[in-house]
Amino acid sequence: MRILLIEDDDTLRDSLQRNLSGSGYIVDVADNGENGSYVARTNKYHLIILDSLMPYKNGIEVCKEIRTAGITCPILALSVLDSPDQKVQFLNAGADDYLVKPFAFAELVARIQSLTRRPYQIQESILTLDDLTVDTNLQRVEREGLEVYLTKKEYLLLECMARKPGKVVSRAEILEDVWNNDSDPFSNTIEAHVRNLRRKIEKGPRKYIHTVPGRGYKLDRAK
Image (cartoon, rainbow, N blue to C red):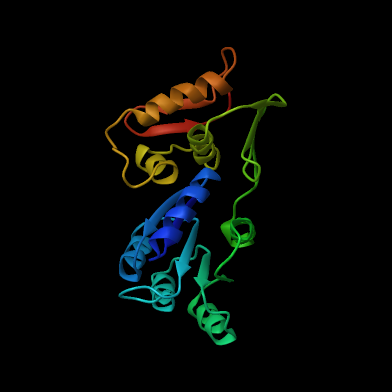
């Protein structure tokens, strides 16, 4: 899952990015409202975490710009103000939830999980292809009922393809969903992870991950 964190407090931003990344999320960051609005409107995210008071543009302005651009992913607003008026302004601007600082990291994760389970995400939590099962809530993979142990990137790569079974997923889509914006698109990182993933989930002659030359990869029924 890819998250955009828009937060001007360096200490909090770095801490949240580190802890969210450690929890299995891909986290991009922006340190002011103007940059955050631009990044949010030019990239695809599953969730946006948005601070209230920031340089250049405040959180409510950024929230309005994101919604005006037609972006529907959940927005979680952060603020030091525990004010009903502030909450109402954020909700009217298009935010889906509001969390008062300081907060426990466990509560933030719970809010993220709640927001991304809502119907407008149109995503199943259990993805199945033949005897291969991907549980996106637990980030657990099973083959023939036995758990397959994957690294974080291997799991995210598999989930990226599993959400589009039988369809080609391009390198650009994989880089966007699994790696951050600083990744080198010309490196062999994807190929190396695909090889490792194949070795772990493919047993015998049946294959799940298929290379489509010049286009990308697809997860399809074992052959």
